[in-house]
Image (cartoon, rainbow over all chains, first blue to last red; front, top):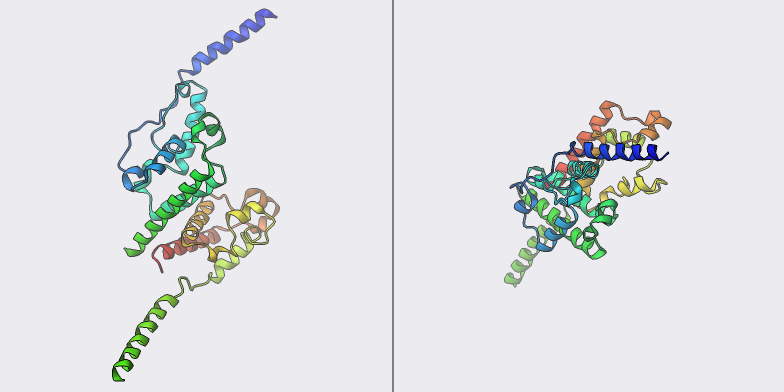
Length: 157
Length: 126
């Protein structure tokens, strides 16, 4: 019995070591000119808020923690990032058309108000990422204002 | 007397111009009949004010579409296009029970064109 247990533990350890050689590509490109911070003037409090609560998964630059590099956590993280970026990538802001921008802004407010963003699992680990009601109101004020600005500019064209 | 009359006339002129400007309805055209028919058949069952499908109603209520802010309207039209393109709507499970509610390719294209046109009109301020 003890021999079987020892065998199983050794196999698991080996498997753990082997999977470390299969690492997903890291999401750490620099900040491009298409990034929202380089495209529109985002107020400082909103910049901070986006950076701590959203940009890890919704941009081309993730602030990794040491344990994010260890499989299988690294796989899960890579999965969240690719899914997050497919919905919204703030690094690509400059290449979106006005319809996408307005819709995204509206969705940002909606998802945070419904507390479906940031993700629960992300909130649990990154406690600072959790948004309180005041922050959500600030965020929604900003998204509405920016969307209205974009709309006003487009109507003038 | 003459002077006051001319002031009166000018004032009248200016005011009527202002009134003309403000009275312009932001959106006049109603939903085209063919679009209405498709929506009635495939979407409206869940996306209406009296719907018992709370999620569906929350995401989109066709009865209230016209009372939304311009921004919300634009994003609603855009999202209608997105869910149709991704074939997320009508939901698969719903279609298993009601196969006749499925959208044909032509109907889907009709809705796609319509939602795109509406969003564009709103952005251009027409």
